[in-house]
Image (cartoon, rainbow, N blue to C red; front, top):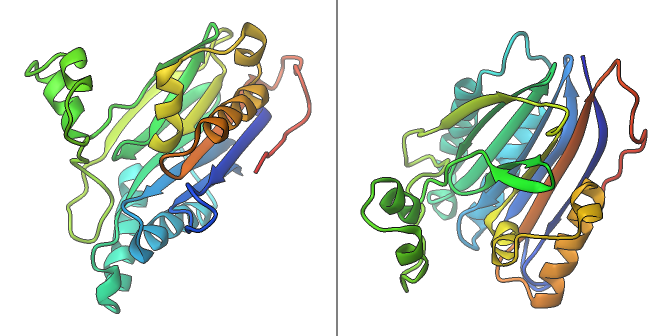
Length: 254
């Protein structure tokens, strides 16, 4: 059995004058595991806000997971809700969101995502990206068309090649891996957050060893520099139930 030792997160709008198109699900106990997620509504429209909120709301309704999560079923149910709602309003016809979901049970991690939000695992004070961005830039690099350095110098924006939408068929990336004694912390980020991490991917060792310090430090970095998009983080640290906790506190920093 696995226990949630600590959790931290935030979801902040780019500007106080704008609605937040991101949405998050903080670690939630489902059966004998934990479910959590981030969603980033595509664009700055009512449809974007609705899409991310509905995606998270639908996941929050999950009450039981028998063996392993049926992500295709969950994503399909969310898309069906998008289709139903979009029929009632032309303004919602183009609704879309990225969605990255993680479920942890007995040291096993399952994840699924569409779009460009990310799951990271913390290994020896270093963040390792576990998901693959469904973007044009990633496609060009993974297919050997351009190098990462060449892509980073491109002037055109990084276009999403997939998202959760009533107009687009599902394209979900799934994977799984095990937690270990050197890697028991997971971090979800929307692009508005990880872009600031990538520019300077380091904090002090003490900050990197504490997900609460990591989340608060990254939030401070973004606010001090100036957000370029809505930005969200969900971080969670786990430990086997038969081992001593490093801390028995759980904190949520919104």
